[in-house]
View 1 (cartoon, rainbow, N blue to C red):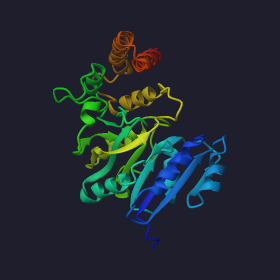
View 2: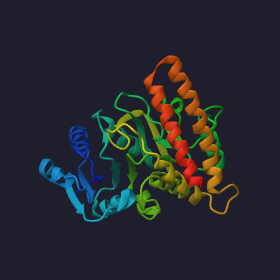
View 3: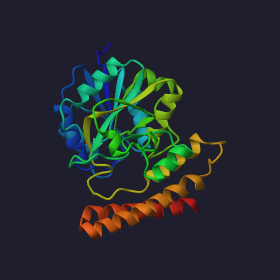
View 4: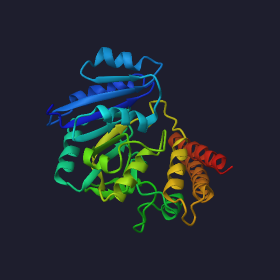
Length: 310
């Protein structure tokens, strides 16, 4: 027996310097049990595996010649992992709080019916990052999110709203973001491993919903914060997350009423269009560039959904 109880799995693809920051914060974290770090590189062309091998010899590096995607890369790492507890950690997720991982592990230890959990994800400036947890993509949750009513009147949308991410008490959700998700190996085995029909975006929603189907709880811990750059430091959020969410919606609602992609895309497109107008007007009145950037994001998301419908 190796004695390793925790396996940290990281999948990289052209991550630049983010992976160095990620590993430095991980190394500085308080971890109260023997652990290993397994990094699978998905055929990067920017020198990521060389950077890791040179600067972090304590990381087990698996350099692949094929890009397996997020789920596929984690499946490769899981096959090599020895721990009974598995942490999936994105290369752009930073454990700035050295106690964050220990606190997450303590919660998992204390709640044997929890199969997976995730923390509150924030931007570097501390703002809550919507998309760190949520509920199964169903017709009602889609409508609630499109209308901006997540967390109001007890309604559950696709994503937890920032108002729901306040406080410190754990919340039961259907899924948590794959940027930082702590899972029991036993729970992973009940859903057949970390394979997913999704190549990139939506795998975490798929895993969480399948864990709930198998009888496990999925917990969100708003009292623990982890910084996530959300796709890197470029600042512009890709609209491709909508592709993954649309795929999961089709997968989870196959054969049911209102399962067509048009029903998923239509309400969200309208919601994003209205938010773009609201943010744009507020940005001009208040002269706040951040609101103007939000308006542009909403317009891009709406346009992307229009392309999905066509």
